Length: 419
Ligand code: HAM
Image: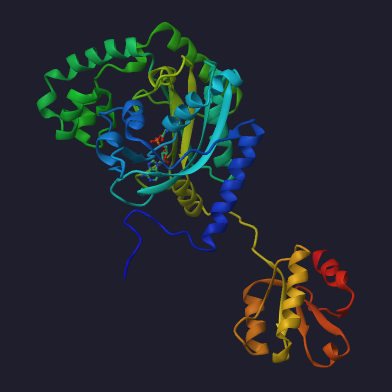
């Protein structure tokens, strides 16, 4: 038997109801902030991600689904959206059409990571990108949007962590300081951290190894080595977060796994989803657009993992999805009335009722069982003496009340059921 690929997941009913609900909540809140939807292809030229996320990152180095297609082009299933959105922004000259582009997306992403709870190889993100302004208001707007989405899903065990990564110039000076500090201790670092020392030294802060973290305790911090403007910006971000009544923690060791960030970065963690606790991450990327060949334009954004959010909702038992109900189930009492039942089905569905009936020649009892299972509001019984008189019995499954309907009066049924 062929099974789904490891790290991918089928979404079956009724789980799909939760997804629908999440997507609707997300879309509603993005609309409130005046963000417009963007959809980009599932795959892109590999160079796009390599150049933006960074050659030395885990994503590009180890996790991308990359292959050579039949025209000898190296393509990659998108591991994240920021690069794709920026590519589209440049390609369609969106910067010329409006000074500030506020865009949102909901899309599958692909990373070949070791699967575990909250970590998949095909997962889904919703996120937003605002391109065209350096205002820290947008940094906080990003945090507020995702925070409000998580809160409106009922989640409460949340930690908002913020940091500033400054600009490349101050970061390079800082990296040298960190290298100097760690040089003599390098032999004591874990193998992974030793590799990072050479390739991507900031990411040593992400190490899960205790002895690495002990070594890092006395390390200089980037937040204490920022340029003046980044410090000022960060102060504004903190003040605006307070204005938006969003509790936060400054986390100087928050480095993020993508290379394009400048200044503000953030994550929101849940205390209820196990080790993969980041529900979302984001920040500023003021140099990325230029780096990818566009006219210079600052940007800021975030993306949130939908599987992790739904896991948090499940673990906190917060999602109250409205019950899925069927408006009408038509029970066929006399076997020969197939086309009559079908016809009532046709007109009721065209009157925008959700309707179902039997396709399996089942007994009346079995049809009733099905109607109950489907959570039906009304059942219409077609057949017997009533039908001979051009009528049918309509039962309200909530109250148990029954009434006779004249089948020749085409609108009556829809009118009663719609109420
Ligand atoms: P990221 O931190 O790589 O950032 O991913 C954002 C979120 O996607 C994570 O916090 C997590 O919830 C979810 N996620 C990541 N990998 C997986 C996985 N393998 N399985 C399940 N969920 C996962 C970005 O992707 C950036 N593009 C965010 C951004 C937008 N920065 C600026 N604009």
